[in-house]
Length: 221
Image (cartoon, rainbow, N blue to C red):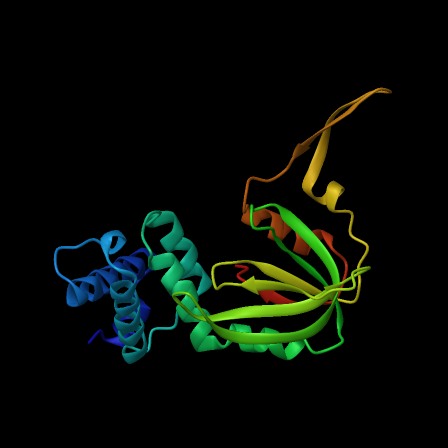
């Protein structure tokens, strides 16, 4: 067992290396000589459960700084995603969000589309469910009725995904928030996107530029 105090006394790089070792040991415990990417879904779930068990038994508190460092150091590793999911699960992030997203509440949701482009949704919450989804222990399913729509829509937020929710319906100019004008004359306006697909800088810029009561903030460093 890792000495918790010793782990806390490590610098960030040492902590990430230790966590990587722990994940490697979890993989070895489940199946020897097989990379995580080549494991079955059942084996991957066993690895995650073993890794989570080690984190819990050693009383390791996962922070956003750890997750960010892991994303930079281990680009192809499942560790950043696992650390984020563990943080959400142990700290009840989705449960906290569900307590804010109550039935009938008017909100403005700022998130990424399935293709990674920023979207802003004025909507009314119908209900919210925290439930397992695929290999994730928890996901946040939001059932809502967007402004000027008659039917209910559904969005599912996973531990790796970012989302902001503001109180009420805010009039946000998505175009000016996400793009800049590179050329303009009397005939044409040429615009360029400020962000790449799933660019986290958008979320930070949105927080800095949107004036409103931010009631939910998920996966934001």
